[in-house]
Image 1 (cartoon, rainbow, N blue to C red):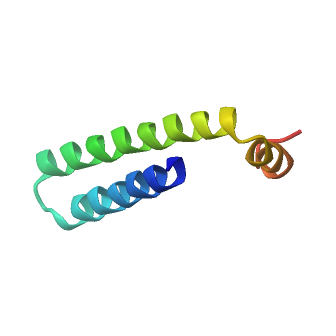
Image 2 (tube, helix red, strand yellow):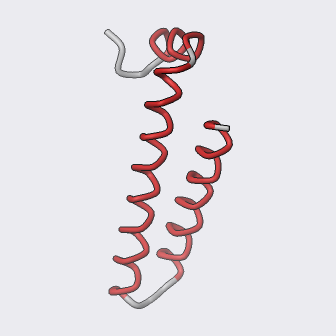
Length: 69
């Protein structure tokens, strides 16, 4: 369920960013990009819960994260 929610949020990010790139109205573009940013926050929230509840995902994440030391 968490992964499905993350996919839905990422789809929303893509849609809002695509719409922002298509509009010529700067005000609308800024609004759409702001909404896309909010969706990215939702992805991060779901990812945080996933990391807290799925030990295997946490291990893989730790092993392969780009920010690892």
